[in-house]
Every structure is written in C-alpha cells, then in structure tokens.
Amino acid sequence: MPSKSEPWPSIWHLCLCFGVGQSLYLTFRPLSCSHQDMQIGIGRTENGNEHDFIDERRSLGHRELCYMADFTHNPAETSQLPASILCHRLLEPIATCPQVSRVVVFGSLAGDAADAYSDVDLLVAVEDEQAAWDVTSIIRRTLQVLFYRMFSSDRQPAGRYWFAGQSPLTRLDISFHTPEQLAMICQTRMYQGHPIACRELYRREPVCRVSSDVTSASSQLQLPLQITELEAHFGSCIYRLSRAISCAMRSQPYRHRLEDCVQDLQQAMTQTQTHRLAGGDGHALGHALLQLVKTLALDHAADV
Image (cartoon, rainbow, N blue to C red; front, side):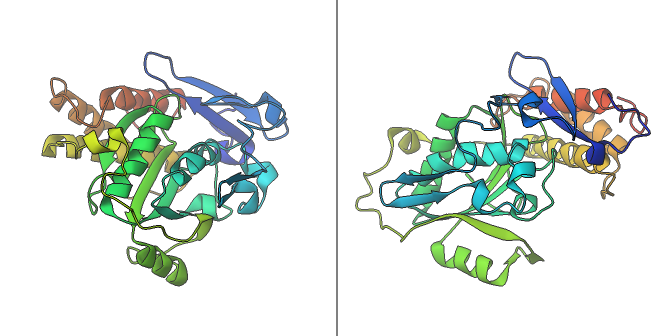
C-alpha cells in the first residue's frame, strides 16, 4: 500500500466496491501489474475482458453499437477503469429502447483524462418524455440503484445514479434531450454554457412512437419521486463529498474544502436519520463515503 508521501493517482490504480449489506473493500495495484490482477466493483476480470463488452462490436437488429474500443484514446489503459466498465454495462440495454436515437458520452471518458475516480456522463436523445422514463426503467432493471439524486437544473428522471456493487465515486450522470438539441450540443461542443469533450457511442435514425400504449409495464407505473428539500440538500452533500474525495485523490483543487464537505454530510445524515429518502439508501452511500475518507488516509484534512 502506498505511503502518504506517494502520489496516489499517478502510481497506483485504486478500485473500490460498495454494496448493500457488504463491506467496503479496496484493491491497490501498481501500474506494472496485469489487468488480470485487478479487482473491480462488478467482479474480477477474465483475460482482460469484462462481460465480453470490451474491444467488441455487436449488432442489435438494425442498430450497431460502438463500444469503448472505438472512442478511447488508449483502450488498453482505460478499458478496465470502473467508469468505463459501468458505461459498457449500461450502453447496450439503453440502446434497446426504440425511442433512443443517440447516446453520447462527455467529460473525462470522452477524452484522455479518465482515471479510477471518473464518473459516467451520458447525453441521451429520446423521441418524447416517456422514453426518458423507459430508459431509466431499463437502467434500474440492469443494475440496482443504491441512491438517486436530481440535478438542480433539470427534472426527473435526469440526474445522478449510484449503484450497489460499484465504487461510491463511480456514478452515472444522465440527461435527456431531443435529437435536435443533442445534435446542437455535439456540433458546438458546448453544454450548459461550458465547452465539453464528447464522443458518440450509439446512433440510429429516430423512430416515432407508434402508440402511447407501447411502453413497458414498469415505466407506466413509474412516477416522479417525491423528493423533499431536506433530501435534496442531503443529495447535494453526498455529491460534494464525492467530488471532494476525487479531487483530493487527484491532487486537484475543489471549491469546497474536504473537511467542510465531511461535516456537512455528517450533519445532513443526522437531520435525515428518521427521514425516508425517496432516492434510495442514501445513508449507506453516505457511510461509505465517510469511511472512504478514513480508509484513504484523507482524514488528516478532515476529522471524521
């Protein structure tokens, strides 16, 4: 295990796993070790592949899916990152939704800056609002959602999704757009007023919904979660601490101090102790993040 004086992100790959009713475990691997020795949140790799998704093209009817080998700069180095594997795990199920015409990844996974602390940022073009709910139903059937938090600037079901069995730092940030809106984002490389790196993962011709009855049973029953202001604040504390940890591990500055993020989350967890969180088991996620601060020896800056 590296000492505190060693630059963690550049010398060691860090893999974390957290699941409901499970312990947090960490596996450190020097960069010189093989991928076969690397343990990740969703299982041990076999021969450098995970679920046969990496370095592969698959055909789904008339739809062709382009996987990570097609858009990572260095597939051999990035294909085993937790965020990369999560992206692969979700891409094909999302593309099975008939009203999805385009899926774009942006952020670190779209460029060459992905690391063990990256998340998955997806922009999805859908034909109508119901299709967005169809997609999130598919996501929930594919992986167990541990906690969901709304975006402050978008409505449900867009938002941040943390999954059981994944690192508490590896989440899915997903938003939904019309085909025209997403085309403009990709053309201008601007999103919410900021320049972005983006890469297309999947595309096909838009298909109009034939009938309003053509929806899955699960999506028909899905309604917006009743998230209170107290839970929204709790979700913000979860997000800020996860960002603070990632920045600390990268030796990057963050606008919120780590110790403040720890204290804010601890206070929010106390305030919501008897509160049923509509987004899921946020307290389990909160405990995992607080434990992570201690385990990664970051508590020299925060009294956990």
